[in-house]
Image (tube, one colour):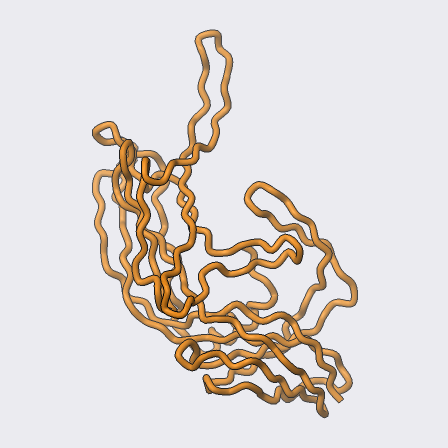
Amino acid sequence: MQLTMKKMGAAAIAAALALCVAPAMAMLTPGTAHAAGKTDINSADIDVVTTKLVKKTGEYKSLTTYKNGKQVKPAVKVTVWQSGSYDAEGNYTPGKSIKLKKGKDYTVSYKNNKNIGTAQVVVKGKGAYKGTAYYNFTIKPKATKVTKVKGEKKALNVSWKKVSAKQVDGYVVSVYTRDKKKHTVTEWDGDKKYTYKKYGYTHVKDVVVKNPSATSVKVKGLKKKTKYYVTVQPYKFVSGTYKERYNQWDEAEEKIIGTRVVDQAYAGASWAQASDYKAGKTK
């Protein structure tokens, strides 16, 4: 997925704070493994849908936002590649992607998927498929909305809607300048292409607000009489454990000859989706 300009400020300030970022998604071993007539589910292409393209705006919406203690269950799509083949007359049929059927070819369950932090999807092979695949995703705090940006001398007073203190530990206020003209951007939703005209934003600075009850901050050190655009992104520190499967691959036999599942620890920050840009001009 494309990293938007909205998130660049939060990522930069995360590094500055020396946050230990939560682990990335578990990697699946490529290739097809056969044992006792069954294919290991780890050889399939497993897609856990955590974002959605909003076709009217060209922006991506998070589908894994905290739901007040209810289970967060992103959809799972599992596909395998069927190789091309020749018939008796030498005619070639191209390969294609085959979508597996939930309940028939695999089952899906979720772990640690109620609270903000790292959650997990567990995909187990069924029928002609065997084995277990693990996929980690992040449950994000709820987003906020910038309500007001008031200009002062070389500064901006930024206000936003408060998020429950149980969900956040603070906020990152990011300031940008905007290009004068829109440019063409292409986004993909599956195999469909969408083209949009969008403004480009250049990151200027971040201000970290470590008070979860805060609803405003003064951003100083800006240029006078300049128009800026502001976003606010809540964050929460989280920690816990998740399971990860490691496969031992036999290159000669082209198959998985052993697996092990280990508990991994994580600690870091979970970021909400950034607010929309709100304009304000300094004095």
